[in-house]
Image (tube, rainbow, N blue to C red; front, side, top):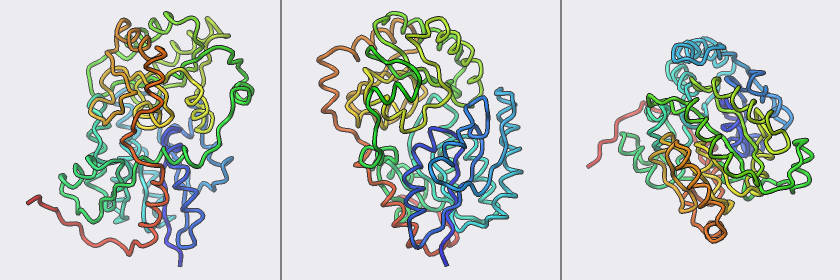
Amino acid sequence: MKRKIAVFTATRAEYGLLYWLMKDIQASPALELQVLVSGAHLSPEFGETWKDIVEDGFVIAAKVEMLLSSDTAVGVAKSMGLGMLGFADALTRLAPDVLVVLGDRFEALAMVQTATVMRIPVAHLHGGEITEGAYDDAFRHAISKLSYLHFVAAEPYRQRVIQMGEIPGRVFNVGAFGLDHMLRTSRMDLKALSESLDFVLDKPFFVVTYHPETALQSDSVLEFRELLAALDSFPEHQVILTYPNADNGGRAIIPLLEAYAAADPTRVLAIPSLGFKRYLSAVALSSAVIGNSSSGIIEVPAFGIPSVNIGARQQGRLAADSVLHCKAQVDSIRDAILTAVDDVFAERCRHVSNPYGQGRASACTVAVLEQFGGATPKTFHDLV
């Protein structure tokens, strides 16, 4: 019988990273793919991106509503509880042999807690990383400790997971999953991208994504206003603004984003979700990627495109030399963008070394899953 592999996804960005892994599980003669969808995928406010999953040829085995309309700390905590109720029912019905979870989101933590109680072994992707500006940092490490198999993006991250007491033979350095797109996903040219977006791209442009800094006592609205003020200094560049995620504080950014686009509709496009093909196409054609998404650090350098990483949300990650770090203040952001669009720096970015692998993470992970014989009781691996 085929081994049932449930893959959990709750956000557009996470799904983009999981796409080729899901395709490879789907194609494996030894594995059966079960797609579990929750979180922002099911929200009209965030673009109902579950439809993209279906359009890409996947059958959704279970949808679990969990997001409340509130994105306060209390609202997020209650959403986690609501998710666990639904995940228990979904996992009981699907009875997967392995649950695959990527990253560090609160939705993923709720799912993994449920799977642990139900004795379903978890395979965790992208563990061992550090993001000091988000509470996701603690969630990621908690998910690692609740997981049985680990697929990390770089050797320092493998060592960190082992340092946490995980068995070395079950921690695999496969590289970053998003880099599989570099080898396997076709991209749009500028004309096709413009037509797909229904937005004329006739100038150099930036791709901008900004999320709240959830671990700090920061004012996300104030910081986002600083970013917008910095973008005003570059009127010769168009801007593609994607919505923030569903973290607490994210919804407060959306009206500002929409108002900024409405004030200059030929220069600025605000869009809930690009989808990974349009996103990758836009990145490859852009002058720079600006914001505080992990993609700016992990995937964008592989395109040879400069990244401006704002604030502390991604602080602690390995980063290529094409990543410019700055404070969430208008002058600091403006200076970083000025460096990013400098011709000499931009040319240097085309030749940087990305520390996150070669784009074969999905195939390596499927090979391990095909050989997985089942979980035995976990033990703590002490460092000598």
